[in-house]
Image (cartoon, rainbow, N blue to C red; front, side):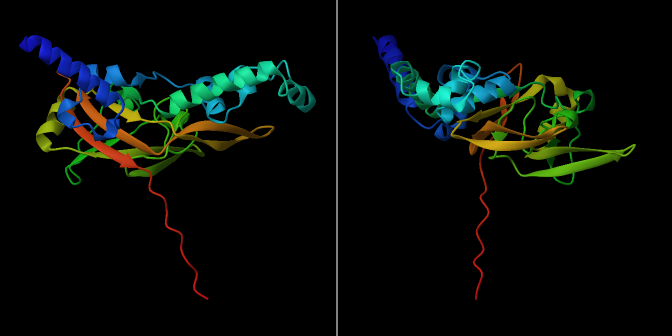
Length: 258
């Protein structure tokens, strides 16, 4: 009887949590198995996948269903938008948009120092923690990029931009800081490949990025994240070493006095 009650309570808890804000769940309750049950592991969001997500958020039926090739002029698209077929596709796109906006996602970067040389990081004794390089310098296309994911993480841990010029070529990259105790730090230094970090988030909007290309500028819309939860875990034991929520910092508008 007690076992049945326990199972019922677990089912009830899972049902309630799915409707809650994942950012409010207590650290002790958050395990990888639990995370998989209420969030979607996005893997790597490449450029094509990012464009697809942004197309849904913009309710761009032609983008989402790859119809630009078929309807390749404004007039063709205008005529098609008056059809029943378009309206049906639009309804499907609206449903998918709601699904994205109401879902939690996560990406896992393994190992912790994936973008560092030799996959190693060094504990900073002065600042008491590690500086993490989330993206290789040759893949740093825009600020707040994590690994190879074409998502703009506006809610980013406090970071600093690094630059290096070698043989006349300047490379840029970011580093964000994770505070940890020295005892945790020595464990990570001794076995860096056994640690990873997880970013949990919601995709709430998109932002247009402009890239300077050889033959002109290229505009593209990428998914945007205004709030995230960052975890550092040990791969074997699944122990959580760091758990914090970050929100986009919006600069205050200065009021000019007359």
